[in-house]
Image (cartoon, rainbow, N blue to C red; front, top):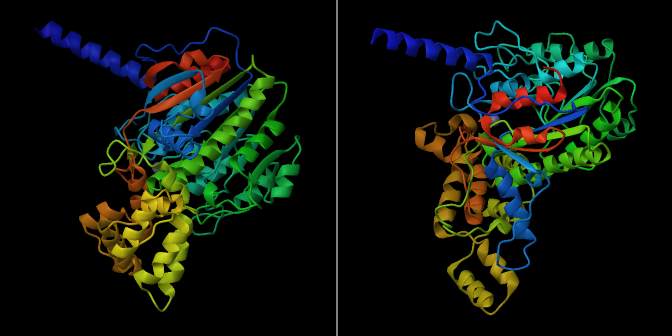
Length: 508
Ligand SMILES: [Zn+2]
């Protein structure tokens, strides 16, 4: 009895050691015996679960549908030859945040929520696949649509106890000796209290060129390390949503194409590209904005595919989510077995862009729902109709009038108008005056009550559901193509993703 108890304890300890050491592969093979990859792309869709990917595919299929029968048109990423399923839990929660999720994808070790590139005790620094590639003489690029020192990119070059230590992470960025940083800017580049040395200046001292216009960035030539910052940034130094992108900006695909041009060299390269705002739009429960950012992410992947076609035997492309965000579903209680994704095509701007219009409206004199409604109609296609108007639309639609059919499909029900009115009243209050009870949180999640209600209603009409304003514990999908990609088939942990990648790169 006693002996078997000790045997059990010994076994448990062994499992723990293997688990903590990252060697417990749970049946998946992490060792690549073939030729080593010279060019490795890791694309991380932040918050991009399988639901988000299929939502983008269903959307495109709905828009381009030739008839009523569903014919799924897959994006490039969902057409890759190898698929994996990946568990995402961190060392202290079944629901991870982006810091441990990316730390694990980069290093092969789990850590606690909020921690960047360190073990859960916050004493041991972890080494990342990007640093290993750099030390092997390869060039390294880190690209993201959020700030360059945000959790996901940070996890490839920094070690900090907290993801919120932006300045310290930024110091590690400029000290990383990586060759190309692109997308957002350095958040809090002069420190939280704006009293530290400007990190862009430190970067220049360390040999980086810092470019901020579309023309300069597109004209950049290989030879000097580069920090390429999108000409337009939001308050957190992230790029705007792709849906709101203007002509003077660069797309994630353009940053990727430039990166390939700058990093291509005889020793090869490792490039991490993050679609960071897929996550943010999921937090806000705005499906149209999510889907647009996924298409932008997929366009960036297409740049890697074009490169791989020229170097088919030396290139590996891995596309993976770090976790799922929002508990998104294809299907909603009210729409049951049907989807109407074409309805979200009416949305012309992101919730974030519309928030600014609401803020302006709030400052105005005549703050009525009736005055707001045309703005909602203009940006989201949702409209109100009297009983008589509705009846007239129904008759026209029945007679085959397509415009009437579409108008009817975008008309708010009585319940939806009631919900929208309540959200409007709430939104017109100053933020500090708004109710903070549990029911209000469940309705609006801390976002502007009106814009989150608009996207909720529009998404519900399309047949899309949301269950959270945070992340979920759902496993994510991984798609791989190229040299060594077969190693990624199966169902395994996010630690394994790093071990596989390091093995194929020949850095472990
Ligand atoms: Zn998130």
